[in-house]
Image (cartoon, rainbow, N blue to C red; front, side, top):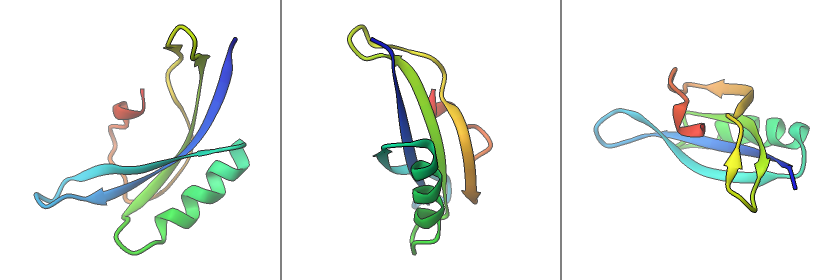
Length: 83
């Protein structure tokens, strides 16, 4: 069974000054993920957020690459951690 997950993920600055992913929140739709990412990007301590989706079959653990829906704030250019 193929499903699509919608996620908002925050980004923070680590002690060594690099930007790293923070909390990821599953959302019920693409629109909700985008809105959640925008709100999360404005919370103190977060430097940005990304809304993305991933489609695949959780029963066999096979997923397509993540699709970035929208970016907010200061996030890394390399988002390979989403894939």
